[in-house]
Amino acid sequence: MNNTSITKFFIAITIVFFACKSKTESGDMVDKAKQDLVKENIPFTMPDTTAPNNWPVVTIETTLGNIRVALNPNTPKHTENFLKLVQSNFYTNTLFHRVIDGFMVQAGDPKSKLASKNQPLGEGGPGYTLPSEISDTMYHFKGALAAARESDERNPMRNSSGSQFYIVTGTPTSLEKQKEIIEQKEIQQFLKEKGAKNVECAMRLNTAMEIGNQAAVNQVISEIKPLIQNKLDLTLNKIPKNIKNIYATWGGAPFLDNNYTIFGKTLSGFDVIEKIQKMERDENDRPLSDVKILKCRVTKAK
Image (cartoon, rainbow, N blue to C red; front, side):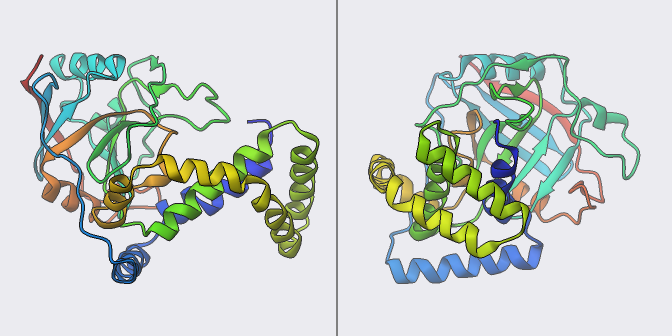
């Protein structure tokens, strides 16, 4: 992205807001979401946690128990790469090195195998990246298996890490909050476009942010909202009702949709994922007690 200040602003109100809550705050978010469900009268809806016959299945054996994931053949580059790494024992003795309660658990850094306590992790990989296979028909529901990647500023093509992956834990997200997330994305997209009004708003927003004028920031955003309303309505109407209900009741991380490659889903071991996300962690979100992948093995393949 060319406009770094705007990008940082929207990261602050989306990813940071949802991803970096303390454990107490995460609990508050869940309680608030449950209250919203009562108001919205939404039926509990969960995604399919079974695997079609042509989806390979991998068991991830960890020190806290086993997690079974199915790999989507519609993301062939990621699926084939994950199978290759599993079959070569690449993940053996690696750690879940980044854990955020109410968001996700991340693993796959080969540098974590011999990592000392408090060593920052997350930069390691197999020496290559994978081209994006992002799809607008795949969603970050709780249990989604997706590829980690570097930020858009360093990685505008959104290529995936060659080995690091995360499993979404997430929280229930009310229908109103889902709408706000999509609205924020549409505003961000508006500010990146090259029309005269787009550029004017982007410049004014940058200036307001640089001097810390929150009232001016709010004014620019209020001017943009009517301009994106039609596009926002179209985007909202494209999302099936059952998808919105899954996010609202089962949970997930909808703010990540269309930004990362989802290449599989969890079939079982949600209790293990829950244990991992509840681990005490350091300032880099690494668990204070190591959670190790003992072995990954293919239990069903094409």
